[in-house]
Length: 463
Image (tube, rainbow, N blue to C red):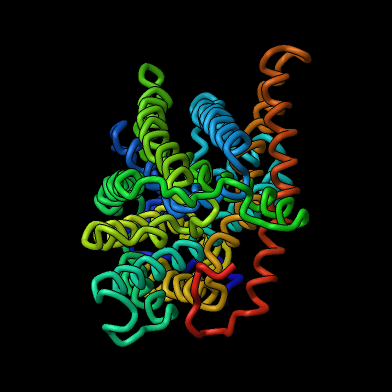
């Protein structure tokens, strides 16, 4: 049944009086318009700005002070600045390559990969990495949303002893319930309002995080030595912190999908408004990342927890508000990163297995995906370790060096030119990041898993 071509009766289209080729073309157009990443292009440059802020600023910013405690002052600041510069450069490359072929737009990351590496090889290079990034983010955002809800509950109750304790898995399920509902929004255009609210929340809770740290001040007992006590611990912690930083700069995986929503013409190519939005987004990123990382580490030193808002306790009303802002933001971020996954799933189901596009298919497919990420998050709620592992394993390739490789393949800059050197430097640094950072993250996951009881309470402060 699934291997047969689609029956015209399965598609509510007028087919009478048309040739089979016209019918097939009409059906394909109808399917393309139904898919989440579709041909509707009416977004403005500010859509690019807040979509990129929502995609970029998320769970990662909350873990930056913790990463600083693993790196130390000098290396920590250097890695933050270098990552900001490299990822802005590679994001510019993605924007430029969106319309590298005249009259054609690469609306999906894997489509650009197929143009650079070939139809089959490009698919195998890009899709697995992109899926690991987007599914990994979905899992981490489930954990982040659950932990922030738990922190909100504990702060409002005045501590663990004034209210009945609720285990983290239940908070993750509460957070997931919102995702089950919002996942039924059909496409990127329909989540614009959600993404805008999420972008505002990200700037707001980041400001609360660093301003509350300033208000607390630096205690006399603060210690800036690396948090690990043993030499192996320091080395592995350093590697893991590199992954934390890589995770924070992960917006590249949806940049082409965001750019696909902007109209384009030979006179007004979409790369101009898209780049304008990206610049604004990266200014916001800098306003969020650097104060939170530097001031958070300055205030707490190597005692900072893997989520800065979990470390902060006063003023209670402000910390409770900030945690709820995180919940709202990661609700939006989850949807931004889930949309390309929904597009892949529904494309395969409709185009390869000839399922009928409609509400039933969308409801089942997307609910299964949300349920899967919820289950994994409940099973492995290790926030900082997940950041480290996913940050190096998949975020480094798709963010730091895969755009550079595609640039070299497509544009073929002259050997030893500035462009050639720049891209190869990014590739070397990205490969080192991909190799080293998952080692630290995986080690930490194993160490915490030894003490963790599945589906029970989990204290993220335990190290």
